[in-house]
Length: 219
Image (cartoon, rainbow, N blue to C red; front, side, top):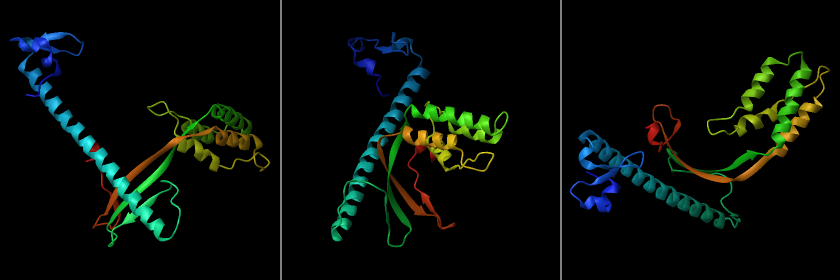
């Protein structure tokens, strides 16, 4: 059985070791049911394996990124180009085209207080366009400004509003909407970037490139 860390306490040297429960209390091992001891051992063993796999994946990601960047550097050197850091995306394919390794660099974006000004202007636009506002546009805007489970606004949905061209009743560009879109642009904050590496293989039946899933929940 995988030992509970609390068995290393001085009490563990006694005939009846003490285990800590979920409320921080020490309980004699003799008072812990065999079922609870079995579950403790199972959970510790499996989570230990998961942590080992996480470490292995992290090491694999680091080494894979290093190899891809080294290959990219060699290609740039061949043509006398300046690499200039790990910017942009790059994809390498096997000779037969059946396998791909893709490295993608994406910016982490958040919004400043200008976003609240943009939302207020958009609400005014909706009220101006029709009595009670346009229900479809209102639903679109409310969807864009919804927060996710982490309390964050979906940047893609908000930025997507800038693609909409709204006009007044006279068919002219709505200046208030345009001002709101400017406020959205001014609200953008780049908090850094994240680098992702993905692996693909061609699915023989469909001929499409399918991602090699490394997320255990998707297997």
